[in-house]
Image (cartoon, rainbow, N blue to C red; front, side, top):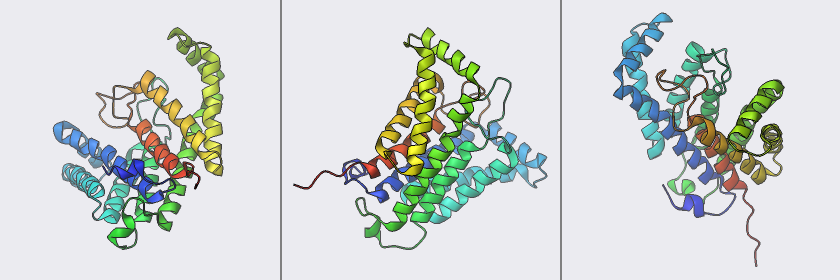
Length: 284
């Protein structure tokens, strides 16, 4: 990782998109690597493909696994970035079509629900589209060095900002529609020793809504990112750790024990946005 990504000047959208690029690649490569370590999962995926009348289900499943690894390595190495993004987007879109749709929610599933929805895949696709947009034209190597901002990267980062905020705001709005559930969650917080547990939970809902609206409007972006990151890190600490996967192996994930990968993707998005919007030091 280039040290200048975190020590470089503020408003460096190119650096921020590179952070998104590397983290998305890391998240996406964990799935095929796990599958290679557990071949039964690949066979199960092949059976799912065959159940949708796709030919050569087992061979197609292996091809998807190897394609995911290749695309992720290409993203990390910053080689063939556009084809790598297209490859990942195609696989994610196929997963939405065959498995996750029409459900939306990926985390916070109600008891009895065993199928995660499409929101995580949609956010991954949004991030990949932003990377694709940044790298869509052949540019000189110098133009993508850390600290060299580009118009494409700025537009791509704005897309990440609006997409991540728009996707995340659905959770607190959904929470407000279930006051009894929020009160129960607040009582659980109180049982863990948090003061004013119910008020804390309700406050976190309004904090997420306010932070998302601020991000969508492009106002108070740095405090909004910090607000979202506070809530997400608390969720990882209290609920999602130590599991990793949000979608994938049934032996690891399930209702009420989803892993951290979705939260870490959102945090990576907000870190990249925060770094780009961090106030520039005044010239002396």
